[in-house]
Image (cartoon, rainbow, N blue to C red; front, top):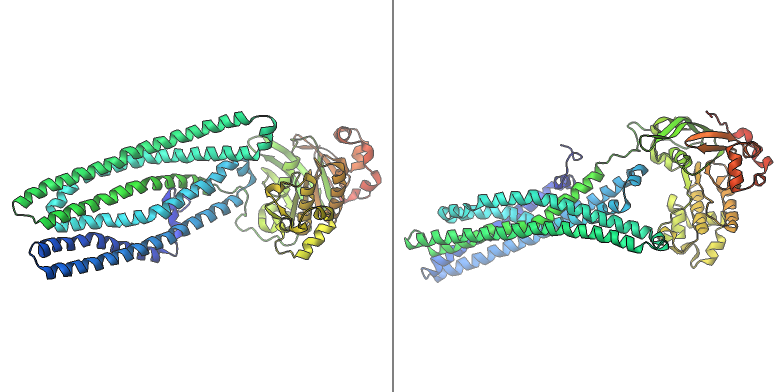
Amino acid sequence: MSHRQRTGLTRLGRYLRGRWGFVTWLVLVATGSAAAQSGGWLLVRAAIDDGIGKGDRGTLTTVVAVYLVVNLGGWLCQLMLIRGLASVGQGIVLGLRRDLFDHLTSLSLRYFSEQRAGWIIARVTSDVDAISDALSQGLPTLVSNVVLLPTTIVVLFVVDWRLGLVAMVILPPTLILSRWFQRMSAVAQLDVRNRIASVTAQVAESVSGMAIVQAFNRERQFQAQFDELNAENRTSNVWAQKLFSVFFPSIELLGAISTCAVLVVGAHLLGSGELTIGTLITAIYLLQLVFQPLQELSDVYGQLQAAAAAMVKITSVLDTEPDIGDRPGARPIGPIEGAIDLDAVSFAYGQTDVLHDIEIHVPPGGCIALVGQTGGGKSTLAKLIARFYDPRAGVVRVDGTDLREVELNGYRRQLGVVLQDPFLFSGTIADNIRFARPEATDEEVRDTAAAIGLDRLLRRLHGGLGHEVREGGAGLSAGERQLISIARALLANPRILILDEATSNIDRPTEVVIERALDRLLHGRSSVIIAHRLATVRRADAVLVVERGRIVQRGTPAELAAAEGPFQQLAGALETPADLPAADAGARRSAVSARGRR
C-alpha cells in the first residue's frame, strides 16, 4: 500500500527512510532498559532468599552490587532512548510540516477558494502540534512500555509459572476494554479535531474582517457565533474525557484484582512450602511492572488517538491532488516573446460555464484591456492566462504553445501580476520589492523604486527602503501599497503582465503617480489590463468588453468610444468619452488582432 493510500499514524513511517538502522538500535536500547527493570527483580529475589533468608552477607553484598550496576545500565539505556526518540520524533514532525506546507503551495486557487483559511491553518498548526506532542511526550513512553510489557511477562513466568498464569487471567478483559476504548476514542478525538478547526476558522475570519465587524456593529453576533462553536468544542472534549474517566480507572481496578489473586494463591503456596517469600515479593512487584505499562500506555493512548485523528485531517490535505501542475513530459518553456492566444476557451468553476468560447490574440508587446460589469468574467480570463486555472474546453497558448505542455514554474517566472488590493509581506519595503527576484542587488532595488516614483514615499517613511512593513501593508495607504507592488513587478522584468484593476479605489493625485509608474511598467511587455478607470484603458491597443462570460464588443479605445454599444455605456457611467485621446490609441490599431464570436 502506497503512502498516499494510508491514513493515520502509519503514514508517518515514510519519514523514517534512511533511519531504520537508528530505529533498530533504539529498539535494542529499549530492550536493554526493559531487561534491567524486570531482570533486576530476579536479583532482589536472590538477595531476599539467599542473602537475607540464609544470613549470607557475602552473597547479599554481591547481589546488591550487581543490582546497582544493572540499574545504572538501565538508566543509561533510558537516557539514550529518550534522546534518540526525541530526535526521531522531531525529525518526523519537521518532514511532515514541510511536506504539508509544500503541498499547500502546490494546490490551485480553487482549493483555497473552497476552504476556509482557518480550517487550513488548523491543519498546519494545531493538528501538527498534536502529532508533535504525541511523538515528543508519548513516543518514549510508548516504545519503553511496549518492550517492557512482554519482557516482564516472560520474567514473571520464569519466577513462578503458577503465579504467572494467575496474573494473566485478567489479561483478556483488559484487552477487550482496550479495544472498546480504541474505537470510541478514535471517533471522539476526530470530532475534537473538527471542533478545534471550526473555532480556529471562526477566529481567523473574525480577525481578518474585524474592520467590517466593527463598522456594522456586529461584535455581539460574532461573539455569539464564537460562543456556540466554543461550547460545541467544550462538549466534544468533555465526552472524550468521559471515555478516559472510564478506561483509566478500569485498568487500575483490573490491576488491583490481579494483585489480590496473586496474593491469595501465593499465600497458599507459601504456607505449603512450595514458594519462597522472595519469589512472592518478586512476583508482586513484577505484576506491578506488567500493569504499569498498561496504565502508562493508557495515559499516552489519549495523545496517540488525538494524533491519529489529527493525521486523518492532515491526510485529507495531503491526498488532495493539485488541479494545476506539470503534466508528465512537460518541457521547459525557455524565454518567451509574449504572444498570447485563447482559442475557443470555456471555463466553469462548478457545473455552469462562466466563460463561453473566448477568442483572444495578443502579439508580443501588445496590450489589451478587459472591461465590463463586475462578475462578467474578466478576472477569470486573467487567471487562465496566468494558469491559475485550466480551461474546461479550448486552449490557452503562449508563443503558440499550450500552457499545459510546459513547466509551470518556468512560465510563472516570466509572468507579472499587479492586483487591485496588493498584498505586502512582513519585512522591509526592499524585501517586498525584491520578492519576485530575491537575488536582486540593493542598487537594482533602489533604481526600480526611483523609476516608478517611490521617492516621495521613501522620504516620508523612517528608514526608506529599510522601513518595516506590517503584514498586509498595514500602515500604508492603498496607493503606497500599489506603488510597491508595481515596483515588485517591474523588478521581476516579466514578459507578460496582468493588471487586475490596479488603479481602482485610488485618489486622483495618487492615481497620477501610479499611471506614470504603469507607463514604465507596460513598456515592451505583453499586457492584459482589467480596468474600471478609462484613463487606464486608453493605453490598450484593443479593448474587449466582457459580459456574462462572452466578448460582446472589440476595438480600439477610440473606435469603441465613438460607436454605440456596451463600451459607450460603460464610459458614460465611469468617465466621459472625451477623456480618451483617439490619436494616441489609434496609432497602434494594427498591433492587436482580435478574432472572435460576437
